[in-house]
Length: 521
Image (cartoon, rainbow, N blue to C red; front, side, top):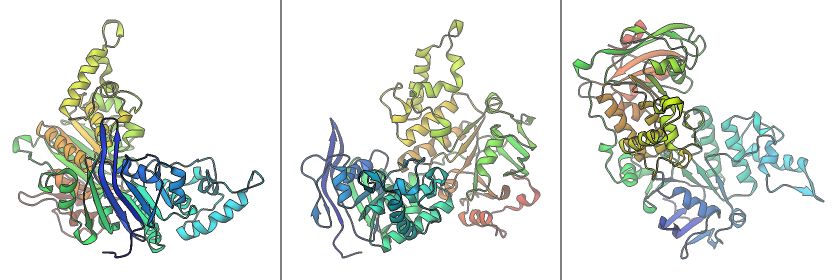
C-alpha cells in the first residue's frame, strides 16, 4: 500500500441528470505511478465520474477534485487539461488523414505568426514516441497505423500535455493480443515515469495483471476498493452485481442421452488460407466451445460454416443431410445463424430502432397484402423480445445505439432467435459487455441449449468456456489441435486448453480424438 499523498483526489462527487441520480457521493484517489482500476456494470457511473474529472460535466454542488493537492476548477475541459488530466476514450478521437505529429498536437498546434509549425511539432513528437518505444515516425499518416498503434498515438497526445493523470477507458477492446501486450508494456513505462493511470475495463484478467488497486461502483455509488493482494474474482463480482460468483455461470442444463442426436456435422472444412481440414460434431442441446489464441482461425471457421466466406474443401451437414451454405442467406434458410464478434460494425443498425433490428431477418413475416409492412406486428415482436431477454429499454422504438453493450447484444440475439434456428454460432458473445450482462447472456445460452439448440461458442475468455461449454475444441494455426471435455464431476481443464493452444498438449483432457482429425462423440 502506497503511503505518498495522492496525485488525484475526488471527494463527495454527485451528479444528477434531471430526475436521474447518476452519481451519489463518490470518492476516488489515485497515486503517482499507480494503476487504479475502476470497475462496475454499464450504468454504474464510471463514465460520468471520468467526464467530471475531464471537465466535460460539472458535478452537483458539494463535491471537489484535487490534483497534486490543488483544488481544480470543475466543468472546464481546458482547465482540467492544464492541471494534467488526460482521457483516452474507447472510441478513438484521431484524424486519420493527418500525421501522427499533427494528431498529437491537434487543438494545441505549435505556430509562428499564425502559421502552423509542422516541423516543430514533429520534432516535439519524436522524443515522446521514443519514450513509448514505437516504430512509426511523427510524419506517418494515422490512416496507415493499426488500432494498437493509434491507441499509442492517443497516449502520445496525453503525454504532450505533460499529463499527470491518464484515464484509459476500455483500451484493449479492439486490440489483438500482441497489441495488448505492447500497450501493457507502455503502461508499465508510464508508471515508472510517475504517471497515475485510471484504468476502466470489464476484463478481470487485465485487472489482475495491471491494477495496484481496484475501486468498484454500483448504481452510481462507491462500493469499495481492493488492493492488489485482495483482488479476487468472487469478491469483485459480488461488489459489482451484489451476488456471489457461484451464481455467475448458469449451467443447469446437461445434455441427456435422448439429446445425443447429431444436429451439426462439419467434415474437412477448409478455406486454404486460415482454416484447414476441420471436422467435428455438435449434438442437440449441447454447447460446444471453441478456444485458441488470436489468429488461430476460430472466427474464420464459424464464417465458413455460415457461408460468409467461401470454402475450398469440406462440407456441412444438418441432421445428416449436406447443406454447406454458400451464402448467409442459405445458412439462415437451413436454420444456422451467426452472432458476429463485432456487433456494431457487422451486426446491428445502430441508428435504427430495437423493433427494426429485431425484425430485420424476418421482415417478410410482417408484410400485409401488397407488400406493405405491418409495423404493429413488428413492434409487438420487439416488445416480446424485450420481455423474454430482459432487454433494458423503455420502448421498442428506442434506437439501438442508445443501449448499453449488453443490451445491444441481446437485441442481436433476439433477431437471430426470430428465425427459429437449429444451430446457433456465437462469436465472442460477451465481448464488451459488463459483468452483470455477461451473467444474463450465460443464462440465455443455457436456456437455449435446454430448448434443444446446438450451440457453437467461440470465446477468448477461458473461464467463460469452462463455465458455459460442455466440450471445448482448441484451434491452433487454423486446425483443430484437440478436444477437452468436462467430466461428470469435473469442469473443462483450463491447463489442457492452454496446452493445446500453445502446442504442448501432452495427454491431458482426453483429447486423443484430435489425432484422427475428427471430434465429437
